[in-house]
Length: 311
Image (cartoon, rainbow, N blue to C red; front, side, top):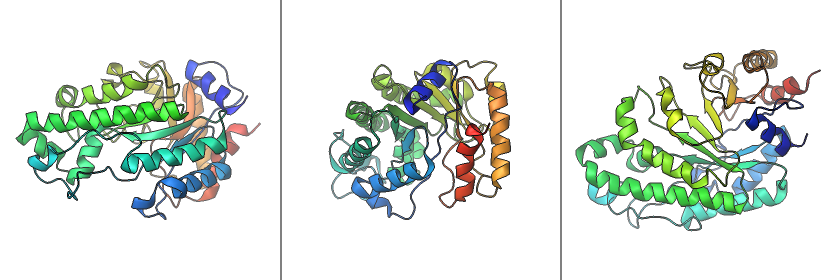
C-alpha cells in the first residue's frame, strides 16, 4: 500500500498491509519567530525523509499576529482590538508558504496536515495565560474576540485543505477537569472548536481531534465532527482498550510521549505491541499521545517503523 491508501484504510477500519504511523516534535533549534517559510519547510522535510512517517503533521509554532503596537494582550480593551486575520496575511501567510513548499516536495501520496491550536489555546498564548480571567471578568467582550479568533482559524483550516493538505490536527486545550468543568467548556468554548472542524469536515480526509492534557472531559468527542481521535492514552484515562468500548472510529496513539525520551528502543517496540493488540490493528494509527521531546534518541523514533514492518 502507498501511504495515502494505508491512512485511508485505517480511517475506515479496513485491513492494512501494516500499521500506519507518525510522530512529531517542535523544532526548538529554530527561533520561534522563524519557524515558518523555508526554514520550517526544510526542517519538516528533513524530518520526513529521516523517519519516513506515513503522514506529516506540520508544527505551527509561529506566533499569532497581534494588533499593531500590542505585544501582549493584558486588558479587555486590547482584546477587543482583535480582528479576523486572512490566511495569507502575516504569520499565517508565512506558515502557508511553508506548507506549499512541503506539499510540492512530498506530493499527493503523502498526507500532510497542519497543527491548529484551538481558540482557547491561542487566547492563552496572546494573553499570557490570562484568557479565563478575562472571560470571567467580561464574558460578552471576551466572546467578541473569541469569535474573531474562531473565524481566523476556520478560514485558516479551510485554506490549508484548499492548498492540498489532507486535513487538520485540532489540538483542544482546556477540555480538562484540571482547568474547568465540562459544562463551562461546553457552553463557552466547544462551539468555537465545532466551528473550525465544521469548516473542513467535508473537504478534509484526515481531521484529527486531539484532546490535550489529563483528566479529560472525554465525552466531548461526541459533540464534534472529525475522522481520528488522539489523546495521551498512556498518561490519562481512558486507555486505548477502554476507549474502544464506546468509540468505534479511528484511534491515534499508543506511545508514551513523556517516557519515550528515556526508553530503550526495545521498550518502544513493546509499547507499540500492546497498542496494536488493544486495537487488533484495525482503525488505528500508531503515534505518541502528543509531541515527543525534540532531543528524543533517533533510535527510539526509528523503532516505530521497525515495529510495524517486523515480520
